Image 1 (cartoon, helix red, strand yellow):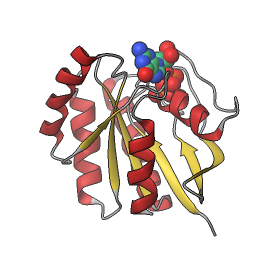
Image 2: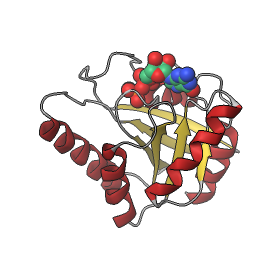
Image 3: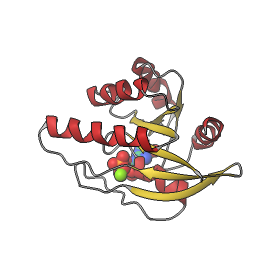
Image 4: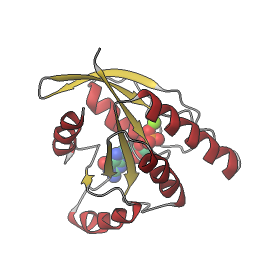
Length: 163
Ligand code: GDP
Ligand code: MG
């Protein structure tokens, strides 16, 4: 059975954009509107000759903050259970949010490999800003731009190493 990789993170950080790039097919729904209900999408990918399945988590429903937190909590726990490795995606445009911190706490307590992907690093200024994500306590991070693919090779090298 091939390994399973889950992509988790807040809505709008770019998970589906990255997922679509990984699976090279327009399968997941990419939506710039925060709070649209989206399902989990599964796809197949490979890197350096290594095959794996990818889960794009979504399905977030914006209600009260409590409902929202509970939904993220559920998705992240599901991902931890299901996946062999987790890509935790955050957004350099918005910086560290309390929801990022909540997800990081859950992931730190799991014993699955976690790769922290700081997305939307479109330029060198944003690369400087990305250092704030060290505060999540997950160690090294991978600065990427899902739209251009910049930095994604390094992330995928580390991912297949971790599988
Ligand atoms: P998701 O909710 O986490 O699945 O996020 P989406 O993949 O739907 O992307 C949300 C928005 O972020 C879309 O408008 C994307 O085009 C945009 N986005 C994704 N990756 C990048 C990136 O690398 N740079 C920039 N500037 N925008 C991005
Ligand atoms: Mg999405």
